[in-house]
Length: 451
Ligand SMILES: Cc1cc2nc3c(=O)[nH]c(=O)nc-3n(C[C@H](O)[C@H](O)[C@H](O)COP(=O)(O)OP(=O)(O)OC[C@H]3O[C@@H](n4cnc5c(N)ncnc54)[C@H](O)[C@@H]3O)c2cc1C
Image (cartoon, rainbow, N blue to C red; front, side):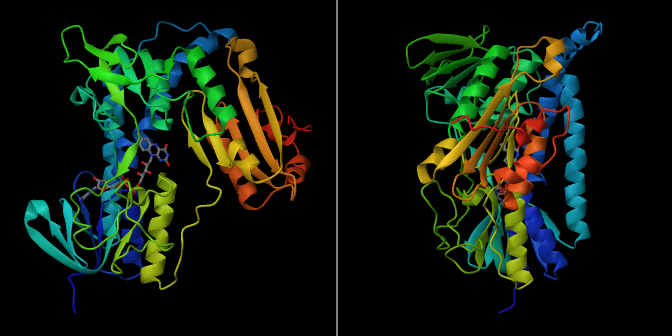
């Protein structure tokens, strides 16, 4: 049977774009269908604009810290509209690059919502047109999840935050995950009064417990009001004075915006997958095998929609592995072991491998942990600490967990991740000469286990 294409990709985000380009470069006839903007969550309303906001928000502390080094800093003021205009221009530039690169690889671009209508067919809803392909790749990512509380329609999610015309002077952020914590730091740094609500006992669940507690303490010191074991009962209709949030303990908080960052769900609703026979999991994720193939042999899925590891570089790797499997005829399963990652909280986290809680559950370990005041704050006077932590398997001496909190933690963990991926032992770390004076040298100078 002949089809219009060898491959139709639904979703031009991190995973879809990589899969489409590599498949086209391998000689396949490829179409990509995108309902919003090329680049997907990461470029348009995720990692990239978020990191730009982190940079913008960090200047306030730099101006203060400069005084300790002899600088007199004049009056400073942050303009949200000026920042947003600069951010939007950069995002538009990146989106253009994504579209051009797809075109240059020979991929046909369709700006439409795609709906699967069978194992080999996709309907472009806005165009009332059906395309056929030998393979279909679902790369539709995820969407913010907002619980069904009364008044939830008055809340925003990260999607809307990136487009607000004005910065809310007061904001309630609901959630304790990494995105909630990152936005708490960003908005606090930009000068908003931030109250973060989390129903659990400590934010950043799933991260190393010592790291999560450390970051929580530092965030509180910087001015974020963290309210634990608290949730929203209802959000009242907005008035001239703002929005009133009623908490489960009966207390009320008046604010200007409510941001829900309570997790993300795979984007499969209304996509026609179940009707086409594709098995979905409990959260609506596409269930795939180790090569990203769904229960329907011609339909594949990569990225956040599969609910494996929801990170851009992982979606990219999964997209590349798909292209290699299908069009380079080399079955390839993406490697999900030892993924280094950063969280752009303030202070920042870099993490790779097991948490202490995970490690002690399965093996005997040595924990090396050091908290200290980084050199810059000896003169800045800022009361901020860093944390360096290594978890070592006692049996084979391998470093099975590395956790860093502090300035440039994300940059450091990328390199520690290389060593860990190579199977470095604690003794390999120890025989590496320290880079002095840096904070990173702590990673190779921790001699005695803390526990
Ligand atoms: C606020 C925020 C911050 C983040 N920060 C980081 C970070 O610092 N580092 C990191 O690694 N990851 C980060 N992430 C996660 C990262 O953005 C995702 O893991 C990554 O974008 C997933 O790529 P994807 O290809 O699976 O999907 P996406 O990038 O989400 O792309 C999916 C695309 O599919 C389109 N689409 C959906 N349905 C249809 C349809 N039916 N028809 C046509 N098109 C459709 C969407 O419009 C979208 O463009 C962040 C996410 C958020 C929300």
